[in-house]
Image (cartoon, rainbow, N blue to C red):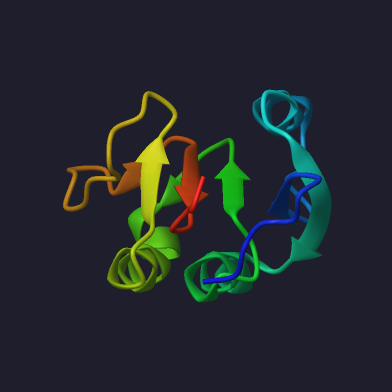
Length: 107
């Protein structure tokens, strides 16, 4: 796991879904850099330690997050819904609200 920059965390963000609510989440943290990436790569970057946080506000489906969430958990990270609960799977509608994926943090 890399050490976050002293200036702050590295965040991966969506090219097409970066919105004011996502910016609000990031504004509460010390963010040194924002890197745009495709959806599957964002989970991978957090899992491998090249990014610290991946916030996603808005609806996704379980099939959009399940594989990345599994990789992230195996690497020691986690993905929480916007209320702070781990993402849940096998819901009747298969829908996720927003979430924040966190890497293993030495902070």
